[in-house]
Every structure is written in structure tokens, then in C-alpha cells.
Image (cartoon, rainbow, N blue to C red; front, side):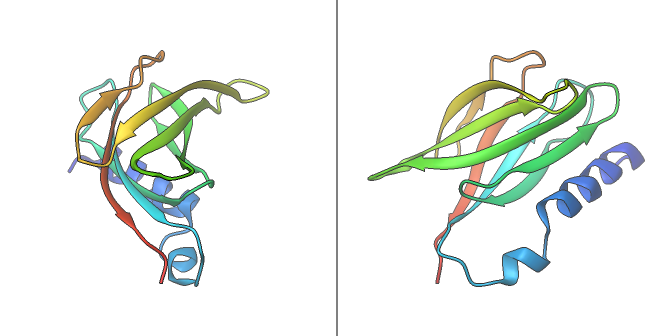
Length: 124
């Protein structure tokens, strides 16, 4: 892992509040995602509760927020909202429908991210 990728992973984990907030009891599912960035950087793994956001900062690309959610009655697809945090105010770029089966979906945003759901953890 390169130093830049390591720094990105640390920032993503701190912004997501891992492991502290993940240890707390909640009725929200935890969505583990893999984000592919448009540079020679290894995929970034992040985790966030449904309806909450995870922010990543990528050198030379910018700062972006990913917010997983579900449609009522549909556990097979995660809706991931991608926002650009570098603009003021922040700007929603797109909502991406990502299957829970592990397939990667391109965000078709600028920049174009690959989003893959690794796992959905149900609340206890």
C-alpha cells in the first residue's frame, strides 16, 4: 500500500467514526463499500451506516462524500449518494444504484468512481 493510499484510508476511517460509532447499538444497517478512484490508487474500503455519510479525501482528485441508503422493502440494492465536498456549498453529483451482490457500478460522475458493496451488516 502506498503512503498516499494509507493516508486516504486513515482519513476515511476517521471521518466515518470507525471503530467507535460502529460499536454502538443502532437500528441502522452498516454498509461496507469499496470505492475505486480515477487514479493509480488502490480501491478504498469504507463503512457507513445507512442514511449517514462517509467522506474520503483523495490527493489530486478532491474530497467526496458517499451516503448509503435503501428503498423501503428492497434489500437487494443500495442507493449510494455521491457528493462533491470541494465545492461550496457541497454539491450532490449523483445517486448510484449498487446491487448487494458485489458487482461494481460506475458513478458516471466527474470524477467517475467505481462503487461496490462488500457487505451489509444487519443491526443486532
